[in-house]
Image (cartoon, rainbow, N blue to C red; front, side, top):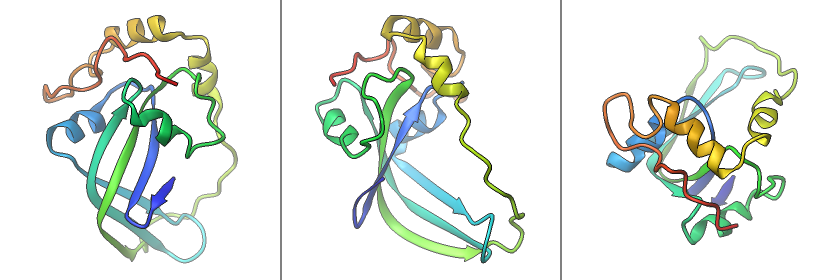
Length: 149
């Protein structure tokens, strides 16, 4: 979601690790990349500083309002990643293959719809690289912060 001319945000949902969150907490650096799989060959990168905004932080609800199609009680939502762009550039995508979009997968939503905060925290606690990254950096705070929304 574009928040202003220099800031974008995206939702961080449950998965098998917390590498992005851990590295943002360490040094704040992030690069986002989009590839054109149809049409002219192009790659766009946004280089900047990012931060995870966790569910118990006061700004979480305000940021979540920018995602009107998201149910705020949807389980599996761990944080909102906010990125302030320092450099935006494009490059050729000559080596990017053509691919056709078919549909969104709904498996993740169905999987985590069965969870509540306690069971989601228990799930994350059992995962090896959620509380810490592959290289030992602090990852997702556990137990999972309760939602303020």
